[in-house]
Length: 365
Ligand code: KG4
Ligand code: ZN
Image (cartoon, rainbow, N blue to C red; front, side):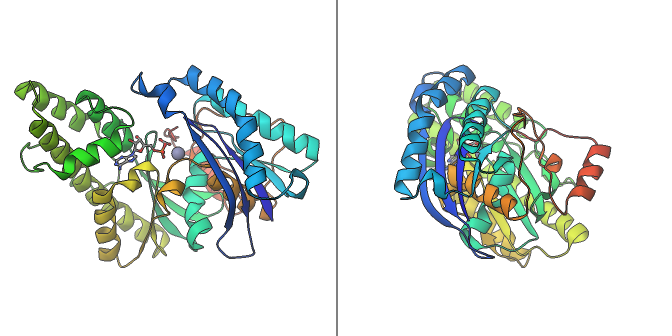
């Protein structure tokens, strides 16, 4: 089964062609990603209008390249998938409308993929990870612990009540004048710093649930920076190291609880799976290994280029859904918000009813 996947929910214009064999890991035939990071760098974050315009300008060419690099033709595709949200609505409209046009012309099925679902299923593309597994999704827009029980069957065990982890890294970098995106810069500075110099808080540690809160940490860091200003290079390194250590401690504590909730509700997970840009952080990866080991499971982390936003994950989620007959009509709407629990699935009809009845908490973007 051959599927084209299109991703435009944030600041990456991406397209890929993925092949899905039966019950095995997938094969990526092409994976083209154009980052808009230079367009947004001057603003210290993603500007939605600039993002949408940049997607319009680049998407046709990116899709053409994805088809050429895969050495296939539009006619040989079995389906066309696009991220239909959650995300910046202008960008989502660009990608979804393009996918609809291609599907209409080719008379092939359209698959409207939830971006978070695509992150959730990437471990099956790379490692054929069987259900059920525990997902830790941490990027610039989302921070969630999710029980992945089947395609379209997701139960959220924890989420952030305010900032996403990547967002906290980005804001820390901005405060310290380190540029955008902040995560890699903060990690680089932290290497030479003293993580014990600043007594920053560890929000939520010790609480029984698996939720996160990061805005207090961000504020505490700002107050420390203001207290000792002007900052030397040495101070910046120590602030980064102290911040990162606090995040690492929080992640470990929250995930221990998340895995405990998973076992109580769903039995033993086949793996702890990490996804999202934050999973590229070495200190965080190290603690994830430890937490997975303590819980008697293994850690699966897809390669960095598949942890961050890309078209292959959309194509793969599209292929998984297509294989189950979960296709979408051409009037499918784009979504700015789209919690994972609202995703339609075969086994998930029960859980989507549950989700409707319970409080819907934000799914992230
Ligand atoms: O998944 P992603 O590429 O895009 C979305 O936000 O959906 O994640 C980007 C986020 C940014 O906030 C970035 O600062 C963070 O992931 N990030 C990192 C690292 N690399 C990227 N955070 C901490 N350490 C890193 N090495
Ligand atoms: Zn993402």
